[in-house]
Length: 319
Ligand code: TXA
Ligand code: MG
Image 1 (cartoon, rainbow, N blue to C red):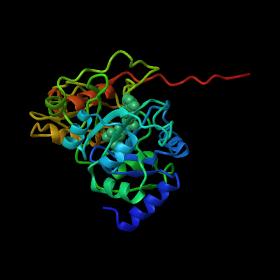
Image 2: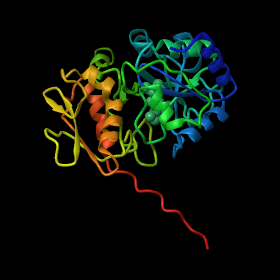
Image 3: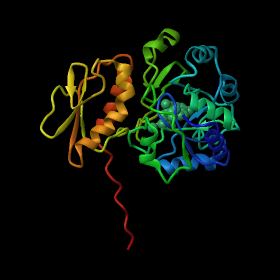
Image 4: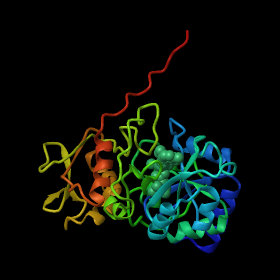
């Protein structure tokens, strides 16, 4: 865990518009001052993100959240039940104080209160809202340890706070409430826990296209290991590294007990390990994961990781 001195230094870097990676209960975030266009531009540059997607704003408490977003009675109810924790709410923005780059000029804002003690301590020490996407190069596997962050972003960011492995291991669930409760991204808070409060959740509509992405990781290939990934495998084919689950042992396993919470926490680190075992020409296969509770978010990430890769951009050569 970071010392008080580490936190003071990290807070001061953030107030100077530098970038600090920090642990949350979901994944490590790459934090920058959410009020500053410069700091937010540095986040996109460090991640090499191809598009300026809106970012999630992290705040320490509900009172602070209410200075940036309008809370309906339903939003307050959800906040009371699930914050701090792995839920992001998309709410009407209270304008003027956040970087327009952080919110992509939208009239809404995605906001959450992380539960990790180091994230809480950092937000309190910095005293500013933090825009924080996952702390990985764009398109790559999200980091669940400080070493994963260092492997992807060393030399591009000012500091990394090490708070140990992330307990949840999947990004937050993103929920829009207007005009009706809609699941924009399955994540660390299962929809089975949300629907008793909101009623049935709608799926995001057809507004999500290659040019208009309203929620995270909705570009097809995302969270991708380097090796190709085959889903719902019960056995390894020649040349494959098999990731098991429950009764399917595999070369590695997400959870020998078939526990979805353990599998979520292990997912990204196991994909990285399998990538290492597979080597440059290897392939990865993974056992079926039940489509319930955290299994929905795990399958969402696996489907994206297995999706065809975007073709590389062909440089245009002027003569
Ligand atoms: O668990 C998490 O949520 C992690 C940790 C670090 O907190 N953060 C994270 O942030 O996953 P990021 O930037 O990868 O995901 C942000 C996503 C964007 O892709 C965006 O589409 C969606 O949240 N989002 C942000 N603002 C939005 C808005 N106003 N309306 C709809 N979606 C929004
Ligand atoms: Mg991400």
